[in-house]
Image (tube, rainbow, N blue to C red; front, side):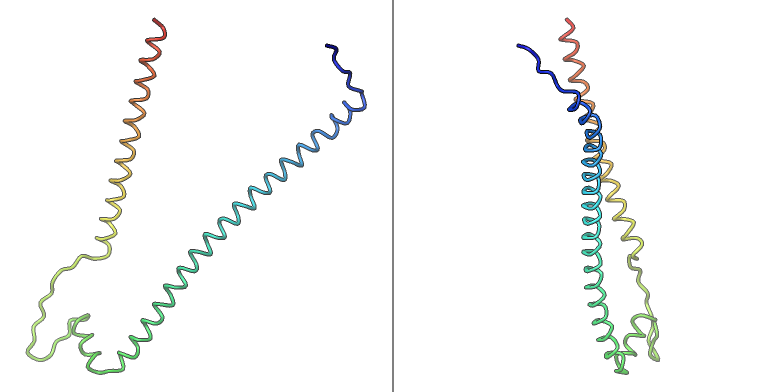
Length: 143
């Protein structure tokens, strides 16, 4: 079978327009990927902001109800006794300790570290088993 000759004009066109076409294709792919990533980031940001907006709206409604409650003198007196340890004449304050938010956050951090440590240890064990298996295969194949 004889090879077909490619005319010189076709080769020149390929040499000149080939890199230009490749550059345009790479540029379009890069632009498409970056635009998609930006769109994904914006959608995530929109979701986060809408969640934040809903929590702020609920906080605002709770604060409005708190304002109406604070107009009542009995409520203000009870609130001051509960939160600021004010007492009536003849009353004693007994303070009990509660877990603070920092302690709760610390326990949550500790739990996540434990999870990460377990996942890392599992991954190391799996890698060790795979390497051991590959070593035994090499030894069998070299015999």
